[in-house]
Length: 326
View (tube, one colour):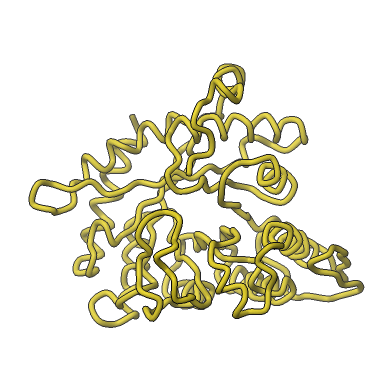
């Protein structure tokens, strides 16, 4: 489900020629397993992997979200769902809080948190608390998810999920920056409301996921700091989208250097099925050339059982450094 299948048809080639992503040192994000079966038979293994990422110099760890699952996970739009509906799925903000307690510098991210499933004041409070306890290490990746059954179970209108996402993050922005805060929208309204503590970071980064349609572009420009392209996006898709965002940031008077764009790597395999790290990293260069500022890779493709998180993280950082310096 790419953002654009033909850049010329959208004017993307012209935009890409006029607008260039500013050069910067790319960052590396490691996805951690929080669903299915616990690696090594115990979920605390994830904390060991986070510690290894912290020590190795990985920039960010990321965990994903489902509050509940409906029975029809075969309807997942992007291939095979990673776990049966009865599989474990740890709550991401709780996991990141535990990780914050055992790490010192690695940033803590959701990719993605289904924000409309949580009341805005509760989400604002939880995220601000995590940011304060971690001394300002939170990056909040958000989206709308895909399961109607999940929304139904929580009593949230699935058809309104797009507007609810905008309203929820808009309300969080108000609660994170005003004492007292006031906000009015269809999805969330309050006045003279105090939500403290506020985040440690002067502006807590929010990354929006999904296809870069006009509505999502507006969300990122008005409320966000980064874009997580929809799964299956090609480097060309991302190049076109990044150029549109740069142009929109400039038009809105926002600093282009603050814009983050994620690109995801799928681990390559050797003939025997073992991970091929050099081949995996080779696929990072086209993403970086397309305007990506952050490369994300899931640890399960490199070390499925987390048998050697220290070695895996060290080798990953070394391989990524070689690409980033190129």
